[in-house]
Structure formats: structure tokens, C-alpha cells
Image (cartoon, rainbow, N blue to C red; front, side, top):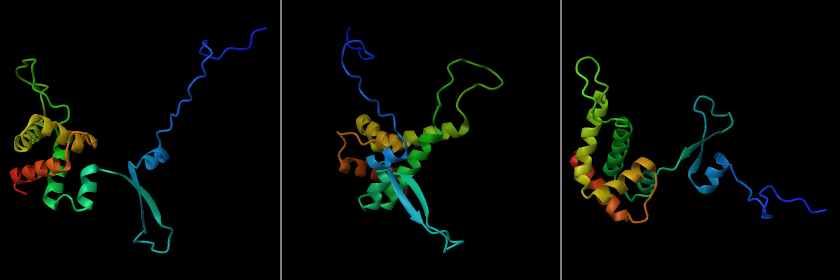
Length: 160
């Protein structure tokens, strides 16, 4: 009698799947910071525990690498990216009634983003800045000095 085969049929053991992407995994990976505070209405109650996601540009601001104006420019850029989400030009040629194009908020956000992108400069740098602020991912090719200078130009363009 032959020994039982594994589920894959080739005799190789199956790889265990680690599907835990919950809070414990995020804390271990350093993507989340635990915060503790007391309740102002009940100072003798137990301390309230919370969590907040680490944001790259916010962490750079906390250690003093970015100025307040650069931090505010990054916040505004993120807000405009969220507002402009899904906006695109109407190519269907509807006339009259609702044109199914971008909303007024999306148009204003896109105009603001175009001004900031023009201030940042090169397309590659713009894409890297957008990746850091919008996706919270630091590209390997981006130097911290280039990111700081791009935020400075953005803050200057927005007169912050």
C-alpha cells in the first residue's frame, strides 16, 4: 500500500498561508502607532487606548525635517487628491441636462492640483511626491531633500 500523498499530488508540502492582516500585524510592521490618553470628562477612569496610522510626511514633520508650511502643503495636496478622485472629462458629448462630467468640487481640486504639480516640476518628481502623499509609500529613488524642496515649492506656489 502506498503512503498517502499531500494535497498537491507531487509530494511537496503545502506552504502555510499567513492571512492575518489585522491590527497586530500592522503594529508589528510599524504602520500603526498606539496612542494613550485620559478622558477629560472622567480623569480617574482608565486610560483610553487608540491607534493611528503612520503617515510618512507627518512623521518627517514631527522630527523637524519639514516646516509647518511644508506640512500644511502636504495636507492640502492630500485633500485635493481625495476631492479630485474619479474626475475625468466628459467625452460622451451630452447636450442639455446633466452632462455626467466632473463636479464643481472635482474641477476646483484638479485646478489646484495642476498648479501644485507645475510648482513641483519634473514628472518623475511629481509622481514620487504623489506616491508619498497620496499612497503613503516612499519610492526608493526619491531623496528626502528632493521631497522637502518639492513641498517648499508647493507651499510657495500656494502662498503658505
